[in-house]
Length: 331
Image (cartoon, rainbow, N blue to C red):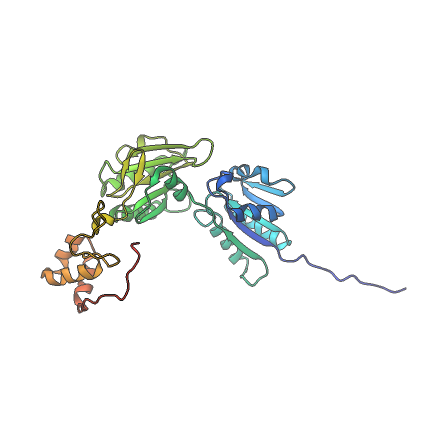
């Protein structure tokens, strides 16, 4: 009698696909996101996100989690991947923007995972709320912008308030995520209070609810009146900068072409050149403050910049102005 021993086999390492669904409509689901869901053995997500792609999940293991169970979702994905499964861990919008990419890497690193560990991790981008809401209201993000979440479930309020204050002072267009919920009603009021310290009460604001979903709603208002509007967890609030305007039902933030060009004729203003920095750009500004004869304190007040920054700039010799060899795109 011959004893034969069958060697033990361990499952091959699996894969975690962090899938951004975009706004939720199938028309805005990327081809790679759709393919990743098709490839997956297991699909994990918040119950609302699962419903958005329910018709794509036939024959798959589906694990539904509640809103506050992000780490549980990440742990489930890791455990399934260790078993050799292909896991699609889904987020609305983009997985890397207030989505599941961050929590998943935290769980993986805590477990000792590295990119060479065998389990492959792929991040599949999707359009975030800031993009989809902007597309519905016009072109509010044509100049510098930022996103700030008003959720204080994981972030201390003073941290959020400092970010709001800095963004308001710096004249960013701002997208407010998680602006209000059934229990968190004052955060949006405080955000408005901070913005009104630096922005005009008639600053344009757009409030978009459920972008590209059946209950989509778009409302235009002003900074002064925005807290009177219907705002909830499915809303994104877009606050314009000092140049943003609303015309014919469209919210637009100019890029700044009028600083250099006559918009009607396309010709440059006196002292400006296409493809070159503005006369008030860095080089021109440095020359101006060096020639002003003013001290750092007065210049700091004039330009609303830190005094120690101004002092450091004044302490450096002014480099001679040189023309660059080529032109740059106006971006």
